[in-house]
Amino acid sequence: MKNAIDDQSVVAGAGAFEIACYLHLTQSAAGVTGRARLGLSAFAEALLIVPKTLAENAGQDPLDAMIKLQDAHRAGMPYGLDLATGEGIDCDAAGML
Image (cartoon, rainbow, N blue to C red; front, side, top):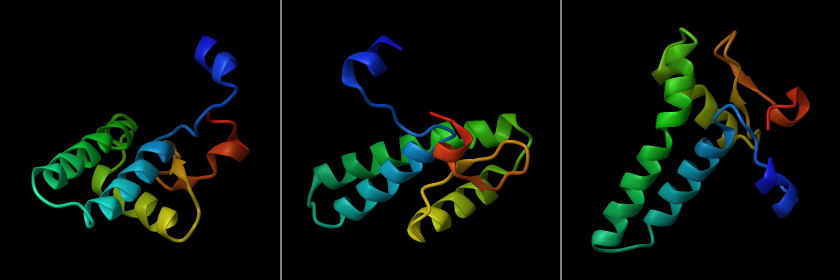
């Protein structure tokens, strides 16, 4: 809470930030060569642990959840995971920050 007040900013929850960051890093990795590219790819994959774990703990299929969330982000809808349905949800509207 202190960081949110000090920085005057928050990020979307429910894995939305991690999916967005993953997609950005994988696109950025295309322009990087050598070992740095492997590092970017490894870090991007590591970020997916958060939404995968959310899906698994909610009894949802983690692979289906990743596909749905990535497709939503690519379509311009930065959704997080709705734990009840396994579908994407607008985190800002739902108050998940």
